Image (cartoon, rainbow, N blue to C red; front, top):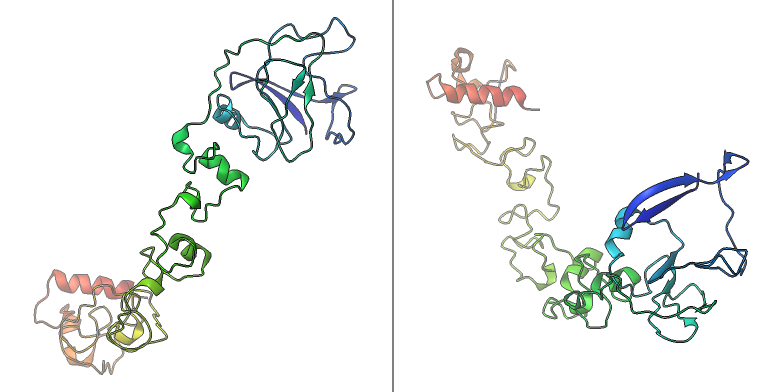
Length: 311
């Protein structure tokens, strides 16, 4: 349902719905004719003209929120802002023409009538901060980007033309961060340097750079990693159990988290009674000696809990 909102000094002061025969109108038709828009006057004339001053008249074809209004109410616009249909700054100082500085919508200049007089402006409207115009084109960087005049491929708020030229390691004319963001370059170790610019170190010769290889010393071109723990299956001592520590107390090639006898060498993991405790542990596990070191202590409790929670 269309509503009209009034703002004073950037703060909403009222809101009203459009009514017809006392009932809210669900929608308003678009105005598609070329009728003249009158600002500062209301028929019948000649007695219904505004007795006051107007500065920086802006007409938009999109709804503006309170935060939108507050963000630009004291700032000169460029005329390129999306949705800005008409922008009259009234800086001419003489004559009867008010120039429309908004482009792209075909709205013409305004004509001043009824003996309108020019006056010096005291409105608190300021030019953009020059420090936010890195390419010195007279347009703030954010407006450059928003209007499409400048590109910002890595979305850091700085026009690409102002980025350091040294950030193009492959000399393809595109910033490294944009190469990565677009997918034209890979960055497997996420250091913001395209992989093709990194030193080629591949100790195991599997075609995967060491900095990106989840098993840099073991050939594994498929990089399979069932448990997603940063160690590929080819070098993970518990390939199906998340195990960042890779601790193997008994040195049998199986990590403690997946070894049914972590304190006794038993690479075969034999468990004739399928009770979760390897045969190599004997009955010690049944007495609480989970790691088979001959002692029942906190380490056994920890191992018991880890096994209990193990998927």
